[in-house]
Amino acid sequence: MLYNVNKTLLKDAERVVRCTMVLIMLSAGISKFFSQGDFFEHYSALFQGDLRIVLPRTIVDAYLALIPYIEVSLGLALLSSGIKPYTTYAWFGFYLSLLFGHYILQQWPAVNQMLDYIFLGLLCFVLPAHKSLLRRDPA
Image (cartoon, rainbow, N blue to C red; front, side):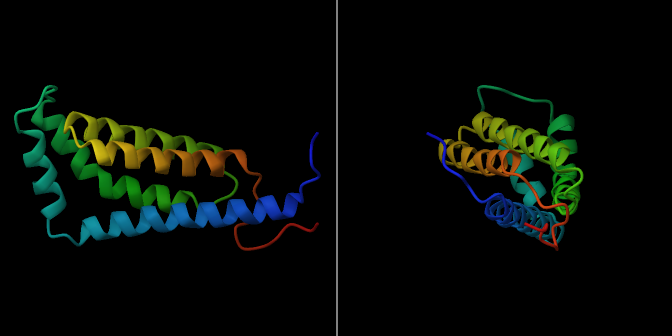
């Protein structure tokens, strides 16, 4: 038996989820820009430790340098309802890459935490969206 669900309510829920995602991305990216290189240095050193999977330092360092730009760009892109499917796929790709990185570092709590972010993106993906993040569609 299917229940009659108010579509406007679902769109409002999607707005809350997407705004949360925007806040996560923008605060994470901006904080990395203002960390005076601490984020980069910390994770670059961790990836050079004694690990089961060893990635070339140039690849790790290049990706670490891109992460703040990815986060800010993705946060801004999530503001647009028109490209929501693409930005949620980018969200999945980004968090899967972080999950993989924490897996390599054998940081199991962080690996598990990444799943919460992936589910947040999944929720955003499946919920219908208002045409604008700032206005409600007429009922």
